[in-house]
Image 1 (cartoon, helix red, strand yellow):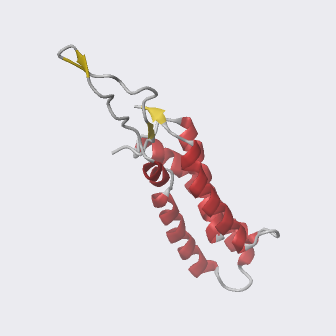
Image 2: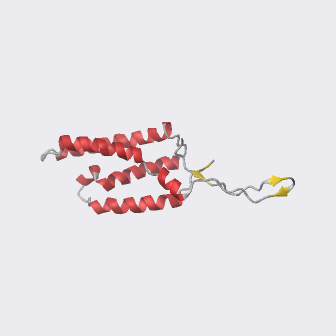
Image 3: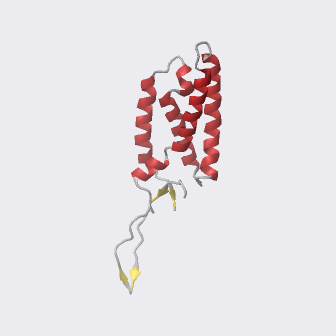
Length: 148
């Protein structure tokens, strides 16, 4: 199965049968809800959350915040790169725009759960929640995918 977002054809094709034109064929692209689901990096976020939990249980003691921050930034960078590899090799995504949008989606999801961003002086938990909600809602409206 591919996770590539597919846009509907630009023009519906008329079907000829016995010399008569029939109704236009229905476009067969991904709906808004299909695009929404295909643009959420669920597996990548799940891996990040699992490893973050391991790191926090090992380095969550007072006085180890600096070391935890380094590990979380490294984990964030590694999984962001592995997300791109995963999308190509496993999910068979071919569109560069979708790679960018899903990678940004991963960044937004990690921002929403805190991750290494919580160590930045300006970080407030509501920032991630607002950005996640708006990004996840809006992106499928503007990205229609590639032609099948």
